[in-house]
Image (cartoon, rainbow, N blue to C red; front, top):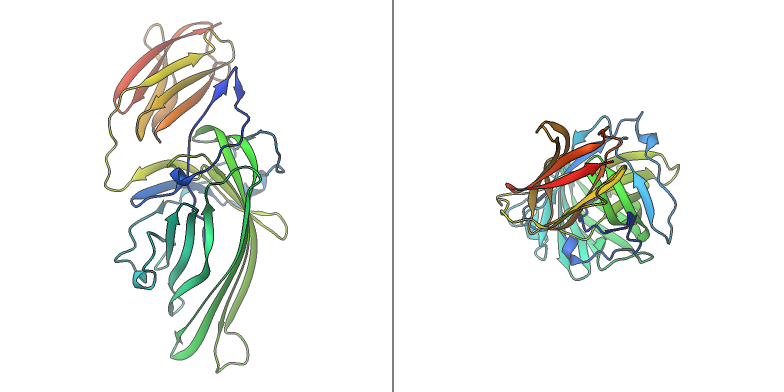
Length: 357
């Protein structure tokens, strides 16, 4: 079952140093009905070994995965109201539902302690069944900060039929979630400077047995470790890497491309607290601004003749809150001179002078 998590960008930059305090992930990061987390996944066998993970640390770290995603595919996760979906009647307390592929659905409950998985409705290989986990599986604990840890052991079972044969399905899940690191992470979408990393170790086992058979009709066991980076807003998981717990081989890497909202149009806004620092610069300068609401953001650089020399953001979807965009004039190969940085947020435009020395 794929993991589903949430949150994005609150960024602080002081004197070119990232604010070195671990963030606390709160209920502001929990998904809501209508959210669509548009993830980009890389499962190329040749590329996955490049996605390494640093050890946990009590001091701020810096991760850069911006150039490793090459062979990607879209892998969106949508959250909808439970009512009307397959198996919904088996989970009356659920507040969210999500399709896990095909006719398989997961049902969640949300509250002050985060998001829990109540159960799943499966329909595959000729078997249709609803499985309720006891206790519910802690998918996304809140509030959560560095060194926090939660563990759970959950079981679900049900009886049904397979090819007219009575069968019993049993699923076990043992899970430990620890916030083992924090800091700034760069993905192909951008840099997120105040993230908390969750380390999720899961051991799952599933079996299908029948009183008519002396041996299980089906059984499996798997153990994985998933590293997930979050920021404390309504946007989703910034990035995750899933590894085999037995040999540390990487199975999947994915990053958030954008967050969209089913049936909800972006709200226009004004720009707040826009700044470019340091300016003048001969290296990296930071464009900081604040989104009043969920926004579509573009940013470009023009020379004094009006010619566009760089595209920094192209209609990127961002959550409400403070944002910081790093501009490396050396990587952009900008000669010394005067430039204009043009920032557009939901159709509202602002231009700031940039002096490259």
